[in-house]
Image (cartoon, rainbow, N blue to C red; front, side):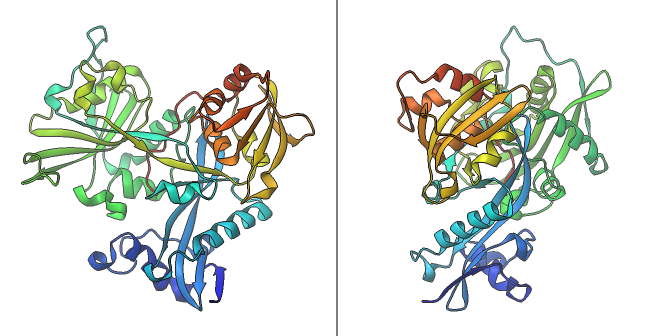
Length: 411
């Protein structure tokens, strides 16, 4: 077997898009490459076995919020191996090559992805760095804790020409948040507005958009798609479902207003929210939160490619100096002892000979970086080892995030 790892060429585009078409079950329905996002060759690495494209891999050059800071992140996507080439280490060869080139060329120091099977990527130093809630509630059962004041603003429909307004609300909403993407125009069109069937997003049709205003000032929005079912796919009763694609709020009353809006949908059997962060206020404000029928699952996976460039990108909760030792077999340039000095003026990371307060794997450090787990929690559950007298309270205070990590977008 002769294995070559390189980007695909323009002449190999059909072969490239054929791989995810087969792997993700779209080949027999839509054909090779149908519904796939445009990915130029320079964003890809592929494995060629004896000259045949066997494994596809791509990454979008994203910018994301990291506890209110801005971080470049490689959004890994369209990963898969044709069935007759599996179990031969092709993906590992691609990932090693990708991490090495990003390290050597100073590209994105963090990689993120949404995994079909999280276990695959945890072998390569990724970790589950966020979770999501899914809601499905009968609009007749939407109610609020009696001590909460009702929303005082008004709703109006937003046209597609007002997309810049939605973008401005979203940008303000994510300013201090954690894991949210600085959205590319394609994400607004494909996902928020539902203008594409990419990843099945547009199956319910295009979105309706509504803007919530208080005293004439926009304070929130919601984008959703209603769809009538003669028989719902899960066997539940026929009727209308409202699929919420995106929402943002700038005031507590704007969040309540979103649910009040959906409480008026008398013909709907369910309001379906497929993606909500674990610190979403619903559980805190609903009169009967169990009616959300909330389910929780893993979501965004993250991987630190270059530790010394990644850690200074996010703000820290307080000033201090931390020392730690990292294990990283795939990216050996991350392995060893480090010192993090952080404060209001910023953060710096450098090699050190000092004794480490914590020792941990690169995957555990990614969870701490995103705020998925606190350092003391990582120690309690065996994902990190603390030296005697390690200042875990300081670790927790420095790494605390304003919000739980989350990404509402599919890529």
